Image (cartoon, rainbow, N blue to C red; front, side):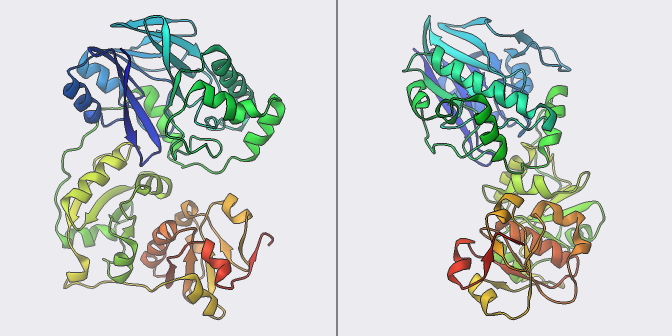
Length: 451
C-alpha cells in the first residue's frame, strides 16, 4: 500500500516526501536538516532504500547525500548531471523497485535541463508522481535560474514536460511537487491548493491552459520577478555535495562581545527580535532580521558575501530555530550567539521611530525610500520616492541622503525593518514605516506607476 508523508519546510516554500509500502521507503528531495526525515522513518519503522533528487536544487542545500550515507540507501540523481560524488544514475525510462513499490523515471526538463519526475505505483498501478520543480499546483517551476541564455529554451521544454505528465498519467494520480508553496522557484502564482491530482492539473495548470508554446514562454518569462541572490550559491554546493549540517549550539557570547562584533567589518550581529522591539532599543550596529517565516530568505538575500553572522535573541529556542533555518541555505553554524534583552542593558542603545502610512501622509517634505522589488515598484509607488530594492541597500548606502530622516517602507514592514536597521547602523536618521502597502492609498498618499 502506497503511503506518502509530507515534510513541509514552510520557511522556504518547499516540501520533501517519505514514500513507503509500509516497510520499505524512499525519500524525495530531502532538505539539509535530515533529522526530520529520520524521525519519520523511525516513528514508522521504515527502512529507506533509495533517496531521490528531482533536480540539482537552487533554493536550498540538499540533505540527500548525507541521508544516503547515514542510512546506506542508494542516492538517485540524474545520470546526465555533472556532480562530484558517487550516485545511482538514472534517466528517462529507468525503473526502480522499492519493496512493493515501483518507481518509473520521466525526464521533465524545464526548471533545469536534466530535471526528473518520479511516478510511484503499488506494483504497476501508478498512484503518485513527484514533480519537483516541473508540474506545480496550477503553475510551473521558474525557468530562468540558470541564466537568460537558457531561459527561453527551458521554458519551451517546461511546457512540453507538463503536457507530457498530464497526457501520460491517469486522472487519479496524486501530484507531489517540491516547490510552489511560497518558494521563489515557482514561476507564477499557483492555485493555492494544498493537494492536487493529474485531473486537477489538466483542468487548471497554466501550461495546459496556454496551448501555444511561444505564448506560454512569453507569458511566463514576462512575469518573472527577482529571486534571492543566494540561489547562485546553492547549485554549485549541491553539485559538490554539501557537508552534513551542524546544528550544535554556537559559542555563547556575552552582551559586551556582541557589541564589539557589531562594529566589526565583515561581521553582522543579527538581532532576531520583533521589528518594533528592535526599533525601541537595540545594540548599536546590529541588524534586525526578525525570526519569522521569511527570515532565512531575507537574510540570505541581503547578507554580503563572506560575512560572518552572530545571532542575538531573547531566548535559546529562537537562536536554535534560526540556526536551523539559516543552515538550510548555507549560512552555516553562527560564529556565536548572545541571549540578552537590549532594553534592559546598562550600555548605550540606539532607537528610531516607527510610523504608519497615515503618519507619512501627514509629514511634510520628507525623503521616502521604497525597498520593494522592481516588479512591485512598477505596479505603483509613491510619487517622488527613491527606489532601492532591500537586497541592494548594503551596496548602495551612499545613495541614501544623510541630512534628514529617511522614511523607509516596503509592502508589509518586514523588509523595511531590515533596511531601517542598516541605515541606523550607518548613522543615517530613519523612520520605519511599519504598515501594509494596501493602506497607502487610503491614507491619501499620491501613488503613481510613472517616474
